[in-house]
Image 1: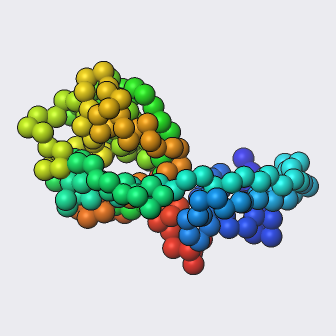
Image 2: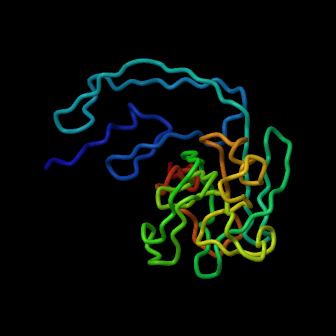
Length: 220
């Protein structure tokens, strides 16, 4: 089967290919709130794969909304949320010694009210099966989330790292809109940045979710 041939940089600016099927776009720095951005699609008649040609030649404008960057610190067991310059701190528990969280910059890819978390799906055998995890926000394609936790013993939030790699916030069984997890879920948007620092884990791969921020701009 013929291999796909990515369009050249003459047609794709500020982009990076991960393999021959995933193309990500990003600026050098986070856009400021209110910035007006226009995507210039110039792919008409461009061969995107052997014998396959693009049919898009248009501009698509949009505006950047409010800013929210959350930093989860594995060393302090706290997550600092900075929204439009105002900050507050949320007690958290991150990956334990055997399952450290990824370090690096991640992006909320989806918001899911309820997730069935099964350790077998992420290569951890029968370590856990929790079918009713509330307030879950996916950070990587390989299963890292910020999510609510109602089952933790001895209240580890802000005190210890006990998760299997996720960033867990205190919640109630069935989910509480006023819990730390519920509040963060309500206030967060898809595309908000979540950074994990001071973990013993490696830096998340740039193609594991929307982790392109972890690739130096000179290599982008």
